[in-house]
Length: 141
Ligand SMILES: [Zn+2]
Ligand SMILES: [Zn+2]
Image (cartoon, rainbow, N blue to C red):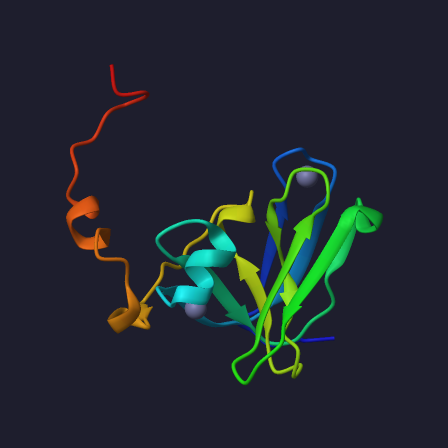
């Protein structure tokens, strides 16, 4: 049990609400990853992940709805997701050095923010111009 003073509580869920979790651990890094593999795994411009000290993932519900994919290769890529809705969920990485929370899965408030863009060289060609796109409160009418 991690008794680190910087330990925080992270609570989250998948979109369909079948899977819910609670984690208590200390964040080590919070980053955007623009590598091609993370773009594939998320279907988006980048992954937004919080890396924490290894801790237990307390599955409050839906543990039987979880699927895990570990990509074979030198760099390790894993994705844990809800079998019903496909939402990304937390996991311990393959070499068991870190617990990773996909930040979008969180329901609890955060007092930390991403501090780095990793694999910036690999970013989507449309990423930087897209960040400056106009903003609408809801759908673009
Ligand atoms: Zn779900
Ligand atoms: Zn990546």
